[in-house]
Image (cartoon, rainbow, N blue to C red; front, side, top):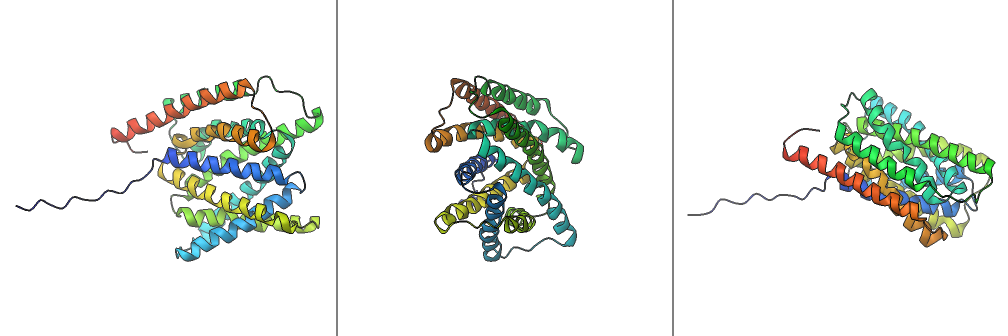
Amino acid sequence: MIDPPVARTTFSPPPLAIAVVGVMLGCVMDALVKGLGAAYSVVLIASSRYVFGSLFSGAAVLSLKRKLPDTRGLRRHALRAIVIALCSVLFFNCLTILPIAEATVLIFCAPLMIAPLAAWLLGEKIRPPAMLALGIGFIGVLVTVQGADGVVESTRRLEGISSGVAAAFLYALSMVLLRQLARNDDAVTTAFLSNVFPGVYLLPFAIALGVAPAAVDLPVFAATGLVGFAMWFLLTTAYSRAQAQNVAAAEYTALIWSAILGYVFFAETPRWQVLAGAGVVVVAVMMAAWDTRRRRIAGIPD
């Protein structure tokens, strides 16, 4: 008697894990931006990041023979790209003013805004476990902001904080719109359009400034584009496989990555409050992962 062939199963990482890696790459890009911000304007950095990102993502689209959306779909991507471009300029400005970990704390307002925005724009039902995980994560954020030294003058610091909070709202909005677009377009195509449209919007302003990147810094500018493309690809994949609120808590892991990068590259020693807040963040992410796994085992669709 011949045994029936065993069906092969392919490993598919959970959306939350994909989102965590995407967030980590986002922090790497933030560190690159902060380093460039000492010598270049945020508009030039943002436009260059998207121009190089368009090259890398465009190569992926061509090699994989992906098709672009129809005119209606392109219009939606173009509108979302306005949000992305504004968010990038504001957050890059925040990064050039505040320590990278503190800037990350401000962008942590975004996950709190994702679930309500998803309920409003996409009709997603807000579940208590997801909101509880986000609430606990935000407690970690509150712990983190305690005990900061006044190393930046008050007016400049206020500019950085305002830029960070505004960027958080726009980032949350872009993530919710990403969830909507990802239902129809694959991750590679979406990542390409998330680079090319912001690049088109920002490049004229960068040219008007009249300052071009130095040749020695071109590899760093190119790295921002490559890492940014990889970040959007992973986040697009994650948000296309699960509801926005299921993976929103992964954003909080940025606190861990930014603290490490700030310490290694900018001599920004994390305060004990940062470490304590990071512990709370881990708890929040574990709760979100447990809720997602419980629903998957029970066969409850996202």
